[in-house]
Image (cartoon, rainbow, N blue to C red; front, side, top):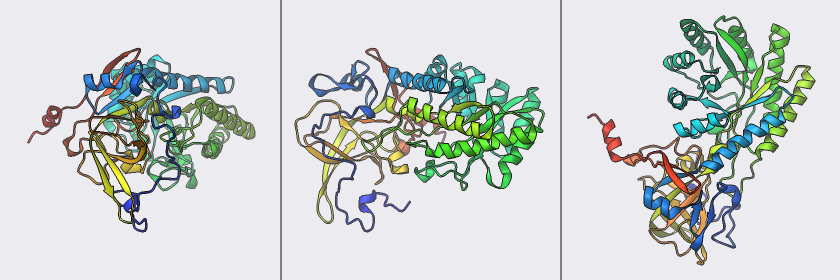
Length: 475
């Protein structure tokens, strides 16, 4: 990726001078919370202390410790049902729509139950995620299984459970799913994942529909068409639809328009050439959220209306009926619902080569609970959570406790200049891909996930302990 492990300020040619990114402006009010970054119930109470779901961060830290992922349950469920309702309305009378929550963003038993109770479907991409879904009592017919290398044991479990769809990702998987279906005496509904050749304008590691990557069957060269024909000719499989996913953290529908056109073109080919009118298509997910003031995501209703316009227009041009449409939001539901609560440990001012000073604020978590800054060069915001402050703002870098120069949580943020050890910091937008991608680097136990609602906080994923870590070590 061409950057220094300690960050872009140390890159060749940068000069080593502490600078402020163009999108980050010094705040006029250092205690201000940007509404787009936080869950709906988050606000400042007496003395400027952050509160969520009627509970103060001081109470949370005292009872559950730090670091901790703090999830606003009402916010999460409101976003989930908002997607459900927006897509149902946008596609009413035009084939209908289903919303699959992408469990890879964040999944636990409680979340899976919420999804089922609120009438959404659930997308899984591993045996572990499928196990959580089944444990939570999600109706199997409302579960999908993704993955570019599904184990035969995972396929067998999915077929035996009667899940509603398995998304075929390779020619080899056609045979594996067919064999499992035959073994269990069922006809398994499947989708074929099509690589439509759309380059999403996002980080290369989360751009998933261009040709040179591991997912799906390519539209070019006829590989996807070959897979479709093979599925149609396999008695133990039922082809339900075609699937496409163009990437993640996307802020407009231009890429979806091209993807839908190509996917529906293939959908029409199946109907005209093979006499099979597939009932569904899946346009995937990848809808962006606001991590900082530079991001401007689409509302669920706007997104649904624009995608409906695209699909209906393309179907009209192809002279085919509008199929039922599925989408897979994950980050857009889970991300804004959660913030990570940290405690400040040390504060250090560092003189930079070429002039300037950067303040390093070390917290009690880091890259083991949020790898995205290091992995994707992602930007985050944060705020002093335990109190308000009248001190002038200082440019800070919030870093973790790990033995790694790249252990950065928030690369650039203005925080009060009177920050001291023991203060609590809150980093918003950490509900997606933080706990899910968490590690035990340096043998640091992973934080808990706390659901907060109506003045009460409860553990839905407990804090890992040193005993948990040692229990895995059989040496």
